[in-house]
Length: 288
Image (cartoon, rainbow, N blue to C red; front, side, top):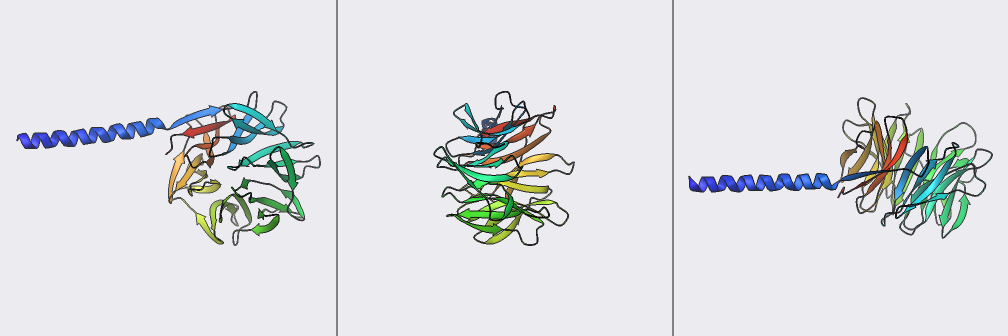
């Protein structure tokens, strides 16, 4: 009887320890909301390994601007002479890809590196949008040809453009590149979105059981993918895909959430919509 009592106590102790560890892991995850000062809406789009965050915000006059957030300090980013600007991604070297809209309402991509702006366009495109930039400077995004509206993907590597299109898709939007891997979203014949991974030239759809309208926006060197999906009630949730496992991310009290980027340290940035309809940025730490 004494031995059984000791065994029972040992089992209870182990269970209690496991509960404490699980509770501490849950408590370690922390959401932080933030907004560009006096902005109407704020959306962070990328976080670097050292914690720098870029994104976009809408000022009180209704105009869109890019921003860089470093150690709690915001810096606005605007391409000279543009009417709208959005910072999309920052790589480990601090290079930022941005899209801007000119006075003729055409969108262009540009690279901000070392304080210098370099504009670029896919050859013959009506509009070019830069979404992601890898550690080596390769850039991906969508472009719009002249004529009827459609979206194709592009890869800009060492000054040369190539097209990235998911087979059979109506539209393709690559969003981030890491080495020989590109993630993004494509739209099928019914214009429903799907996530994809292009790995060394091979396309693969990224689907999550029970999730619809999956779209991927981010990829880090560890292979973690971020984005969003819709649940059966039509609500949008943030998404983290790690080793084939899909995890929902929801800002507490939000009516919708979207996860844009995760750095190798496991910190995630994205946007959420509060009940008043305003868009805010969030940082989720302690994910790993």
